[in-house]
Amino acid sequence: MAGTGVFAELVDGDGVFKYYSSGEWKKSSSGKSVPIINPTTRQPHFKVQACTQEEVNKLMEEAKTAQKLWAKTPLWKRAELLHKAAALLKEHKVPIAECLVKEIAKPSKDAATEAVRSGDLVSYCAEEGVRILGEGKFLVSDSFPGNERTKYCLTAKIPLGVILAIPPFNYPVNLAVSKIAPALIAGNSIVLKPPTQGAVAALHMVHCFHLAGFPKGLISCVTGRGSEIGDFLTMHPMVNCISFTGGDTGIAISQKAGMIPLQMELSGKDACIILDDADLDLAAANIVKGGFSYSGQRCTAVKVVLVMESVANALVDKVKAKVAKLTVGLPEDDSDITPVVTESSANFIEGLVVDAKQKGATFCQEYRREGNLIWPLLLDNVRSDMRIAWEEPFGPVLPVIRITSVEEGIHHCNASNFGLQGCVFTRDISKAILISDAMETGTVQINSAPARGPDHFPFQGLKDSGIGSQGITNSINMMTKIKTTVINLPTPSYTMG
Image (cartoon, rainbow, N blue to C red):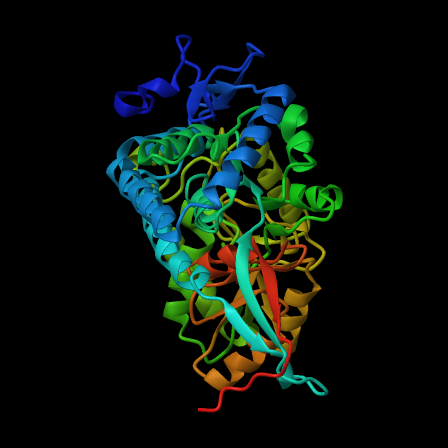
């Protein structure tokens, strides 16, 4: 169970989960806590510390000091500790998964999978880091016109310093370790600010790194209200890099952060273009999986279907039949559709549905909601004047727009202010490549739904969907900088062979 066994030290005498600093679990001097609401019951389930700005200052100082020593730790030793943390994540997948079920209503099986996937990510990152950080470049000066070979240039990748990691609620463990592991293997220290919904799962994950034996102060995890410590963290002068996954809050962070590297993934309106030669059974299966898994609360969920009019009726019928088979209920029962994360999220989704109804969309199912639980809904004959055509619902509601040309579909995709991922279904690979090249998104999937992963694949968004690129290798590289040493020779020197 959460907060028991090896995790018992995470909880104080009042049942409030502690924050992590200096290699210890601590109570905040504020004496305050932040409740975590169970999406299913809509009642407080956990509490976490409401940390103060003074506590943030202290752990930042510790992170800066610890990083200097960690940067001198051999790469093989860093990798060894990461492998230990990965094994512990897998070993303790059950209590971590329990937290995910209670905090964010993630189905039990998917919650356990997230813990295991996170362990695999950490192990892969350890191995990849040893490979790419163990290599440098050697340049000679006479390769540039007008120069003799009098200069030898040695380049290496060195750590940035203190990395601030802010993961989202929907993958509070996996998208946390996707930032933590690259930072650590590259020689950085890490300050983690988990989302409120998902904070306890993240604290359990951090304890696995604690048990692995990382040095004190190298990893910190601070909880609290964003209104009190959010801007203080993102604008802190000791932060050397911010890796953020979430919504449009990231735009505000980028405007305030100053001259430090940013890695940001900020949502999407992923379009699924269906051509008239597509395998409609394959397309329908991917639309339902891509649009409704984890109740549509994924940045890479299918957010709008753009289907050629000639096959629209057939596709909608196939999707409707599959939606009818989705189970709706509790995350503990591994239901396909579970409650969305907060009541405000459910209200936002309902607002999109009401707007579509008022403007004449065709409801393929009856709209139904109980608390935070919204039944899956397919909306046909959606037009561009409806909010759902452009806004990200982050819930189990999927719009279908009928198009008369491929160009119309590409235009709708590119007119969005988002550009995370998209997909195209066709049997003609030449058409697929041309459409992929025309779509203004970070990734295009051909004959499959959008997806983040495998975790070593590059993952990036264009426009308002993000800055920089993720994926294990890209994350390691962006959390380092190039250091150059030039050896100057008194006379030209050439290897004679």
